[in-house]
Image 1 (cartoon, rainbow, N blue to C red):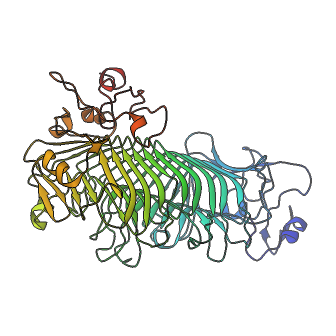
Image 2 (cartoon, rainbow, N blue to C red):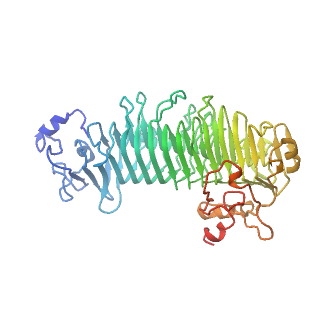
Image 3 (cartoon, rainbow, N blue to C red):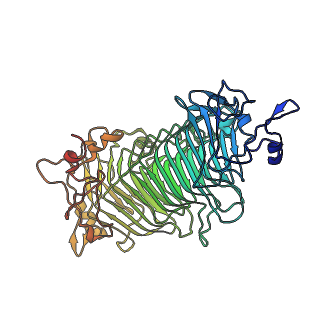
Length: 559
């Protein structure tokens, strides 16, 4: 951490001395690693090397050039004005990381003056633990709670980033990691766990990189694990109509990433009303081999006429999976798979064993699950449960149409939709922009249930019965035999609310008089081996449709 206007050599030479009345700390040249302490009760003339002789200010600590294995410890429960910066030449070792953390009782709070709280630039081998970061009004526009930034030329990623038990609020972005303009590579081996990012302007957690080139695909960041992150009330910028703002977790330019057991809710409420791009709870773009699983995303909003959904695989995403996630009460779709660019790089993605309940609250032009885009190919959607209760929905009445459980639009090929539950209270079960041939887009083994009138839109035609649609469309046919059903899947979620967590059991089939609808066997369509349902139960040879098997109620739901 180089002090402004002071060289590293000068810091060594003046260690322990007064120069023009200003004490400049320096890490001892030899030995180490060292642990330094900072406390409001300390003194910047101390050596800072014990809790009994701590420094007093962050500005003073910022003059040390931290080497591998060093630690900077801030007194728990105390509030520190200022910021911290690590630069190239500091840290840099995955085996011996530099650690910034609290000591004593509670978390230390870093409150910067209109800027970022912690910046790590052009280095890694850094771990940040057990801190609270709180921005002010200027930081909300210009700062980041924790920023890992790579501005170096070349393709070398900087390895080993750990952020755990941190809270970041009041910044432009809570946490950001990536490659700045002009750089090609960002960071690798990144783990962000047990973090809360909330009340930030543009995003809670964001990864980013250079513009995507489909002819030479490259990804700035790789090997990420994001677990137990809470991203909420990241409002969006009402003045930013040229790009999306207000997302919970946004992953751009990443390869081999996992987002697991995280929650995004109530984001995007103040995003710009004229923006052509909107926020999402959790979404991915310009990335490959990303897994979103066991997450919950609800009540996310959009200020404009687009997005505002729970989960999304957006432009240029490939070989990625959304599974075992719950979305409910979002303005936009529960699950969106979308390609707006004709690159052909959006391919080989899977959406399975997810639950969507009462999504598309504000924007009926979406639905529970929505898939469309330019040159998008090889998409599998199977064993999901979608419930749409839209009778009397104000936005639908204003638009003159109700959002469907499944919406399909043009631009795709190689799309397979199997063993899902699509359930409504009289709203459309499926809305397809065109009458797709099974060679381009196939639906088989799904349950289409309506507690009201049965309605399905297929191109320019509407159908009031499954048999009629099957006969005309040649959908829901396998080997010349009819598949699919319109039977009641016995979901309490058609009447009862689905809340975060245990409320997902209201989307489990509970048929008492008759068996729940059965779908295709996994071998009859392109499905992964050894499948388990939303709650972790193994699927039998003849599985029930939807995200959860009926055995879930007794075995996994705690009832």
